[in-house]
Length: 447
Image 1 (tube, rainbow, N blue to C red):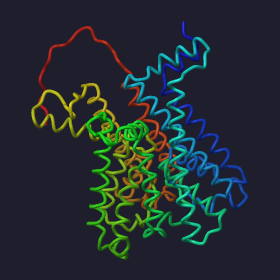
Image 2: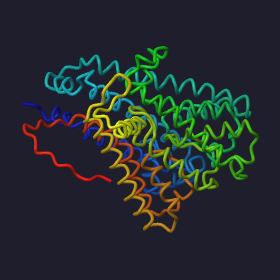
Image 3: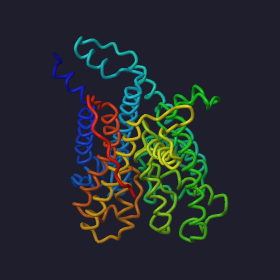
Image 4: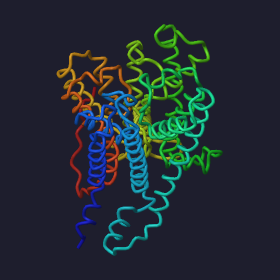
């Protein structure tokens, strides 16, 4: 008979939800301490809860200005919550990926470990160690580049440069989007050292550890890549290229965004703007001054998000990539969905459809609710809802003005958007029910 501990481990979703809930509760309590605010007064509980949730869920939405409202202690708490949330997401998602792919047999090992009271789980330990080392290495490199730039290019003191470099390296690699300036990163819109460093850190964090690890091993041999890596890399590059092109075309003459920049800066800003909706959340252009067509493009990019088993949110590029292959196979009249030299199982197709459908439904219901709770228009509300659900952290500027009910709704969206796809994806993949009979088929008119 299984012990209570092993019984809990049989339901990974409960562990994930409980772990992130505890982290948010601790973060809220720390941010409500007087030492965390510049005023010396305890922070409003909604602001503290919203900020803690945004940090743990690596979103980046904020109801107060990070630099002016929080002290260094408060900022360090935020950075710590981002680090915990990012590492937790990458570690759990990577382990779930290995479990689903059948490479690790994690569930059986955890149950056996709990039964025998042993601590030897070499495969799990190696995976977790690699995730942590990879994360810290990427953050260290980004921090070094940013520190040098702030020190040499902007005349900051060494201590201040290190602080700025480390803080933004942590928030960028973990796709959190918190910045220590009131205009986020708009003052650095034409600085490639700042923008490209943060953009590439966001991309690396959002690809997912299994993909990065495979690329490190066999980047010279694309034919050997797994379907996961092929889809993740292909869709990521396509979205970055298309997003950059769309923003260049739509915002080129907008005097309040790209129009005021020279041509090289326009390309840099467009690439940065196309990268950030993939769940990163920084902005080098004023989002509120963009054209509605650019908002719609950003909505789509935020909803899709980044790679599986990474720090990015959204329904994931693998999900949208799989759906594209399903549609293509159906249009060609093929009975099976083939990707390269592999066939896609029917269960995986249903999982992709389920996650997408539930995501659309959640965004639709939340948009209706926020429209009823606030005086803002559909474009702004839809943007805010998708940003929260996709843990993107971008905003048209209405986050602080949606009221307490609106803030609580966005908190729920950030939590569900961060935890939901991970736990739902693993739960669907692990849920196998054998049916010992088949019902008669009946054709239904579709379309």
